[in-house]
Image (cartoon, rainbow, N blue to C red; front, side, top):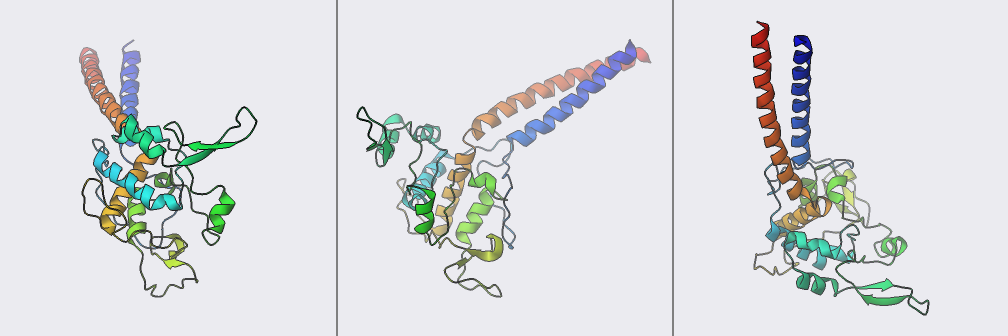
Length: 266
C-alpha cells in the first residue's frame, strides 16, 4: 500500500513538472521558425510582449496598423484578420466601422443573381490589395507578395526577423551578386529580395504624434504583425500565470504528502 502511495506521489510530481514546462513554453512569446533567415545573424530586440509576463502595447499596435494600412497594404494582404478583431487593440465599434468603410468588396449574388460591390463591414476580413494571385504577381514583377497574417510564425526569429528585414536594406552588396531588379538585404535568404525598401522614415504621420523614423515604423509594424499572428497572446499569458500558480500550490501539497508518506515508512 505504501509503495503504491509512493508511486502515485512520484507520478504526480512528474506530471506537475511536465505541465510547468508546457505552460511556460505556451505562455512565453516564441517566434516560431519554419522559414529560414538570411546569412546575417538576426539581432535580438526587446519587445513589450516578450516573456511570461509580457503583453502587447496597444499604442504600438495602433501605430503598426497605421503603417500597415498606409504602406504595407498596397501590396500585402492580411486575410486572416477581420476588422472587428481591432477591438482587441483598443478600437471601438465606431472607429472600426470607419476603418472598414474605406474599402469596397465584391458581394452577392443579389436577388437578381448578380454580384455587387459594397463597403466593407467590421465582420469582413481585411480587403486584399489585388483581385487574385496572378494580378498580384504581375503587378510586382513576377514576385507574389506573401500574406502577412502569419508571417511572424512563418519566419525564424519572429518579430526580430521582421524588424531586421525592414531595417536591413543596403545599397552595397559587397561580395554578394544581386540580380537585376532585386535588392540586397543580408537578412533575407540568399541576400536578394524582390521587395524594394518599403520604409524610409517619413512614410506615415502618426496619429498619436509619435515621431516617425525607419526604426520606429519597423518596430510598430513588427509588433502589429506579431499580434496578427497571436491575437490571443495576452489572454493566454494571463491564463498561463493562473495555471502556474495553481500548479505551484498543487506541487507544494504533493511535496507535503510525500514527506508524510516517507516519515511513516521510516
